[in-house]
Image (cartoon, rainbow, N blue to C red):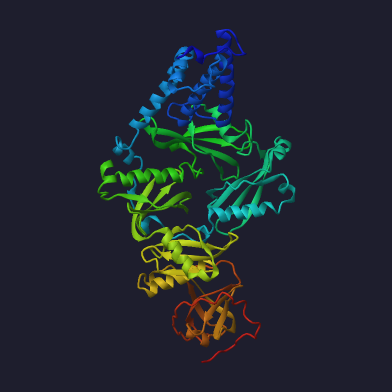
Amino acid sequence: MNNEAVKAKRGPTGKGAKILVNILITVVVALVYFYAAVPAINLQSGDFYAFLLLTCLVYIVCAIVTSGFDTKRKLTFKDYIHFVKAQCLPIGILLAAIIVVGVIGEVVSLPIFRASAYRELLVPEDGDFTTDVAQISFGEIPTLDRDSANYLGDRQMGTLSDMVSQFEYSNDSTQINYQGRPVRVAPIAYADIIKWFTNRSTGLPAYVVVDMVTQEASVVRLQEGMKYSFSEPLNRNVMRHLRFQYPTMMFSTAEFEIDENGHPWWIAPRIVKTIGLFGGTDIKGAVLMDAVTGECTYYDAEDVPTWVDNLYTSELIMEQYDYHGTLIHGFINSIFGQKDVKQTTDGYNYIAMNDDVYMYTGITSANADQSNLGFVLCNMRTKETSYYTAPGATEYAAMASAQGVVQDLNYTATFPILLNIAGEPTYFIPLKDATSLVKMYAMVNVAQYQLVATGTTVTATEEEYIRLLSDRGITIPDALPQTSVSGVIAELRSAVLDGNTYYFIRLEDEDIFYSVSAMENNVAVILNVGDTVTIEHAADEGDSLILNGYTVTLDKKADGEAIPSQAPVIELPEESSAPEESAPVESAQP
């Protein structure tokens, strides 16, 4: 290096003083960066290597400045290397070592060298769809997606005059099973830094729960506010508090959940690298942080409490399955030939089963065409994964098919969830309008995605879907689940709707009416008050005053004569209302 490259400048004159200044500046910058980025002090963490590299570079830059190194003239890379050797050799050696270890660690972790290890990260079992995925009741089917749930949660915050000026909805919801129902929960957040400063002593006073079935959002107030959240900018920030408690552990982003008593928690999955230095990302356990007190407890994966629903992330499960599917016959086959190569589709959704949350995603071929080979269900707490063979349309093809049925309404299809309807794998797709409100539902058969049923209620949609299955000969009507009620007719009314006569039947000791079409149920016209009948339906409608689409069987007339008859199901048009206040029909003869 030329002597002209170094000139005397103002600043520390002694070599020891210069080194001391360099160290002080480097330490300050490193501490600020560590506090802001909170990297794990772990040789398997890429963030830790970035932290070390930044620290070394800061020291070298400081040394250049304090030494009077002339940067105004044209300098080559060799000039800087010579300077590092002369002025900060230990730091240069550390910098080179970090780069070498990082490069070698990355190379030895590549799938090309460790294909079998990557393939074994997730090994799904073959499952039987009809047996494993029970037909769930309408009270368990989520009818909202994440965006719609966040919209409802945010709108609910606007109804709380004492909170809306200080807090806002966080838009960071988590789907869980709470007291047997699928819900999304999200904490509220400070509206801005000033609101944080004035409210931090009491913390966040509430969280939001959105029922995925009824679409009802509610704000749950806490007796003691949550002191730890992502809206905290300083020490009580969730990830920063975790880092100070567990400086060497690597964490996935913490998820907000509530236990069965409604107490708020942050669930922070612990990440480990199982292949080489940086490969084979997996979850080894989790830290449960009390959102109110900040108390942390670590659990190994097998010991995590059962009320926790989200230990593994959907992105991690899909990544691990992609390794399994693409490396099934080795790395070379994944590039050339691609025999038996499979991969996940581009989306996922959640299903509530057995008091756990399962992630669903489709499996397609290496060509990623418009057809699925099957799908996987993964328990998000235990990582138990099952693969189901079900050739058919991809989720996006099914969404396009559902949108095509209601294209005149400009509704948008949400990503589907997979249901067992009459033993058939079925895409259930909520259809929402421009304001993210769900207005209709669609059911699309996985194997025959042109078979689409829509309705304004889940019940009506299923009725139409089952009718289509029956018409196509896919299912037998007698094999479909039925609910029935028998009793004596206490009240009988009639009304003409859209040119068709409907009879409304109320049984003794009941307050509801069952609607029966005379056109489809010809026995209805000979019914009288006092007759004993059996009324059947494909599913329970709930607690409405009028229940639509029922069939009726006349078991015994009022005079004792038995006249058995059965008629097919018919759905009352949605626009119909309560029966007209006409006089009760005492006798209706053909």
